[in-house]
Amino acid sequence: MNLQGKIAMVTEGVQGVGRATSIALAKHGAKVVVVSGRGNEMAAEAVVSEIAASGGEAMSMPADARSKEQMERLVEAVKQKLGRIDILVCNAGHDAEAAVFAELSWASFERQLTGELQAAFEPTKAVIPGMIEQHSGRIIYLSGTEGKDPTPEYIAFGTAKGGLDTFARYIAQEFGPHGITANVVAPGFVRSGEPFMISDDESRVIGSFTPLGRIAEPEDVADVIVFLAGDGARFLTGTYTPVTGGLVME
Image 1 (tube, one colour):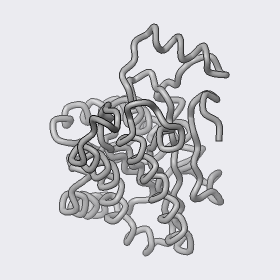
Image 2: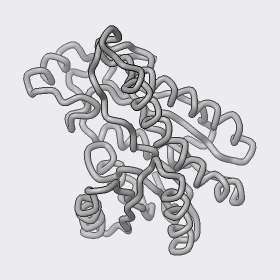
Image 3: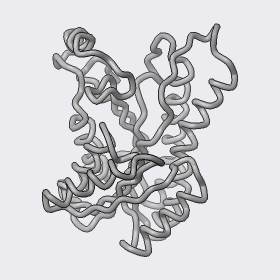
């Protein structure tokens, strides 16, 4: 996979799958902008240092993926420094909050939907004009299998992920004529604790029910994202890829 000369931006690219994705994109030649939310600036600098130590190129920039103003300023700053954005990985989202429907308030439900979708909407809105101008772009959204495979007590989180999956398909349809692809990667359980924190014992039990015999490492997910960002995926758009070791099959 050769991403030499490409500029990639990863929202919340500082830990777990986001961190692994930032490192993997740089490993394959992309210059990576590691976007961190408030309080994660030091973690972002650590990722940049790790990339640099391996011979890659990266820079960190703080911004709230849910803020229109911050995302517009961020994208403009990246264009001023690096000239363009070729790849956007939307990894920022809303933390999963457990609640059965009978105990769920509209305020909590709305907060999770808004948080998840706005973290995809604003970065996409900010990068699309430049991608249209250059007639190329790769957008990859980090979702989860809960949007298609209901998980008890996570109706709000799952509904938000289902909305994200649909949003990505509409982006793929509208901007395909401009050379822009949009695809969804949907991890299941990941050892980094995304989207749910589980114990080692729980990991082993879930792994025993998984065809490939374990839960995912962050790098398993990152490698799929790198593929979708590269030329090998040039004719893929609007796709949904569960990265679950076969626990959830599409």
